[in-house]
Amino acid sequence: MAENILLGGEYLIKETSCEDVFTPEDFTDEHRQMAETTEQFVTNEIIPNIEEIDKQNFDLVVEGMKKCGELGLLMMDAPEEYGGLELDKVSSMLVGEKISYGGSFSVAFAAHSGIGTLPLVYYGTPAQKEQYLEKIISGEWCAAYCLTEPGSGSDALGAQATAVLSEDGKHYILNGTKQFITNGGFAELFTVFAKIDKEHFTAFLVEKSFEGLIVGPEEKKLGIKGSSTTQIILDNCKVPVENLLGEKGKGHKIAFNVLNIGRFKLGAGVCGASKMAMVEGIKYANERKQFNTPIAKFGAISQKIADLTAYIFASESLVYRLAGLLDDKLATVEKGIDNYYEEYLKGIEEYAPECGISKVFCSEVLAMTVDEVVQIHGGYGFVSDYPAERYYRDERINRIFEGTNEINRLLIPGMILRKAMKGQLPLQSEAMKAFESLMTPSFEELDESILFVKEKELIKNLKTLFLILAGTGVQKFMDKLEHEQEILMTAADIAIQIFALESTVLRAEKNYDKASDRKKELLAAAVKIFAFEASENAGSAGRKGAFFVEEGDALTMILSGIRRFAKYDATGLLAAKRTLAQAACEDEKYVFG
Ligand SMILES: Cc1cc2nc3c(=O)[nH]c(=O)nc-3n(C[C@H](O)[C@H](O)[C@H](O)COP(=O)(O)OP(=O)(O)OC[C@H]3O[C@@H](n4cnc5c(N)ncnc54)[C@H](O)[C@@H]3O)c2cc1C
Image (cartoon, rainbow, N blue to C red):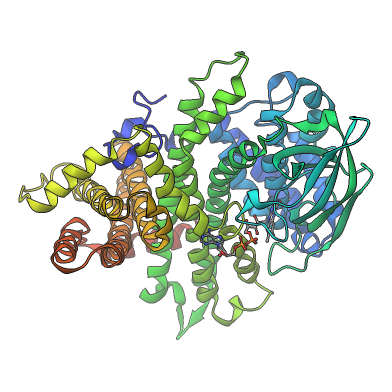
């Protein structure tokens, strides 16, 4: 456990020691065992059936889910007293990562074990858990989560579905339509959100067998074709009053807390999918010859492999750092206290900004990966004989569900600023210091004998850059800043790059001394490549943000500050790319796995 537990958003103003971050190199034997069990299951039971599953043979999905239940993969988050395993978040990230190799099946799995199961685990009464949890974590029943409606997606609380107490007081009568419900076609238990008396947003546990629940036809989708996506129509659906979940009017708490968890889990899933897609690209690049040369030997192609490896290393570092933060925080919640899950969820909510970052960064790394993997395949990437085409289609949804990447980008700085307003994050005083350093450039020489000193300096500087931009935005727009979305997006982009880069550097630093010479070289290469990318990405976002918030002399000063704060000396970048690409092509794998 880390000595100093960093709170949510604090990474932007504090330095972290590499000893305080969790990295994949810290996995225990139990973690590895869980990962291996999952990978074997996917390899043996799902991958051979992937085409059949994509033809919507849902029997295979339901069967697969039952096998997951037998293997304990559905009970990671459930309490021991109901047959669950209550494993740490690192374990559930690892399972999510390995399951992602299973294409559409992984979406069904994620919806079932995440948004389908967790509302019951966290908010269910003992009687509700007694009634449903065992069925769900054994895979006997599949679960689904019904929040979205035709008229309310991102604006989830704008739901129109209604619930009215029956005259005899025994049932709520639900009416409305839920849209895009994953597992809709075969789920037996639905967590449904509706407004009691058109006012109190509330969750209900609704069985498929309840009178008035109608499953709509399957949507015809771009990707993840083997996952079920349907409307759920509530036509005077009779739900026993005992099935109200949590408290009347407190459905928003359930919806948002469960989404936070979904976001960090999605980060892990897409990280796994990125690795799988990249390896496919590497294998193809080694095999395919043009001009009598394997295309992997061409710099234009090998550079893609190096960049993808570095970005995936950043994704993975970020995801497991976040898992470690969550586990450390959750370990401080005393088991057995009456409001255990309330405190537990507060612990997760603490890291809501980082959960959003995990979702956005890792889903966009997957997007970049599948795009480049199609490109590496040339025309063969465009036809369905090769898996690259499916990866490309399956990826797209990840930037849309669990809160679109726009919504998450708005939430990241929004939540950080809210913490500052509540006095939980001294952003204002830190922003003042940042402005001072903008006025008084330091010409201190870096001590090159310190490992990754240039990258650490870059991280420090990017934090200053974030504070200057966020500080200027707050000064200019005060509480109206939340309406200046273009500015918030740039602030989010910088905050994302900082968290990803810091996670990358701290992981490499923590593991450098114990690494073999070859591994050292690869770690240094990945750090250099990603530091260059992060400096470019954050610098570009910073410049855009500066033009959005300032003009005249103030703009000139901020722009010159950005030149200074986003500067990174990437000497040796080409050699780093060649080293990393060569290793990836020789080993035909993700070299940090
Ligand atoms: C395959 C699939 C599976 C899904 N599974 C489930 C499920 O199991 N359960 C469930 O409840 N839902 C599910 N969803 C729904 C999903 O969560 C929503 O599609 C998503 O939240 C976006 O809502 P929307 O589609 O209505 O888009 P909209 O909210 O209409 O958004 C359209 C565009 O506008 C942008 N936008 C919207 N509001 C704002 C704003 N305030 N500021 C800036 N930009 C904004 C969005 O980012 C997006 O680019 C699923 C969707 C799909 C496609």
